[in-house]
Image (tube, rainbow, N blue to C red; front, top):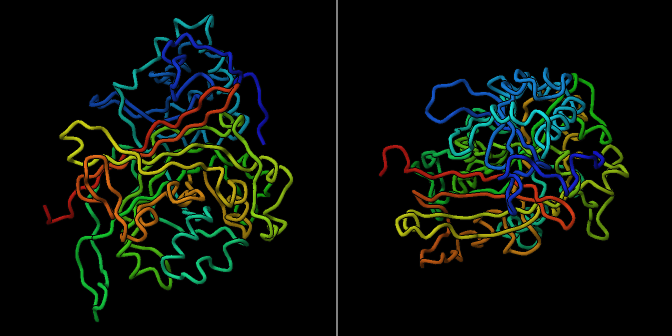
Length: 440
């Protein structure tokens, strides 16, 4: 586990004034990574770090002389069109660049003027997926989500017997992962209507979102070499917000016996900013399991994981409909929860994924699975909030939603807050549903 250090000090202030404003997602204690360029410029995408409402262009920062000499090659590695080369350098490199940036961005830094020439306003930027994602694995870490979904189909036995013993996951589609602002056509596929004797083909009628966190792998492991739970987090570069859109009616027909396919592969949306585990260190919490639950098998258990495996990340889901946009009414909150409720930790996911010798690579992405809390107002998907569509959610303007409609924009937000520590934010993850192909 990462220890607190000088970069976490709550008293730190930056010469970038917007980084000192109350409520900012990106104070000097955060310093998350993204890949960006000036919007509409045709420039090459390159890596940057958020500070207030600005972005430090890391390739330029490597050249301008404002960073410590040993940090310049690290910043230069972020000048690529993806962060994979920097991710592969490992935890020592990530921490060293973070420290150098923290010192260069602090109030009174000697070379502030030179580094200021490397800033780009976030309002002038556009983003792309921050890594070349070779593989994407979606997990199922919320016992509350698993129980709520199970009740819809198996009221007497909602939780499958393996859930409390093994982290459940499946391999998803990496090519359709897009960055916040993504718009996609409503998916089409086969569904089996109630009472029908044959399936029909057409647009999904039960489109849903899934509130998740994305977990980016940094340094990988060799094929055949498992990663121990005590070493697992040194292989994790950081976290982002993730919406794993789901076509529930297509999923219900196709998922047995091999699991989701067309119901999941059409789109996954992530936020542009990757918050490092080091930035999240002040928000660690003990892993709490219900009394009487089985102890994890030895390869999934460690004292450090029990004491600090959970992270208290506040998460919020908001919906903006076409009618809301026309009325300029803003978005409506659907639910809010925390990542601390997850049943399986990041370290356990890495240890389990590699225990059979599977080799992870820099830029690989894990989805946490839908993150629901213990009460329904903390549910991370409409299928839970609406009891499978039977109890639609009423929005402030009187609109009802059992599932998502064309034109709906779903917005995920995340942040950490704790007295005595700086607020650490994730920005937002935004995606919009368009009509199905051939439909208007």
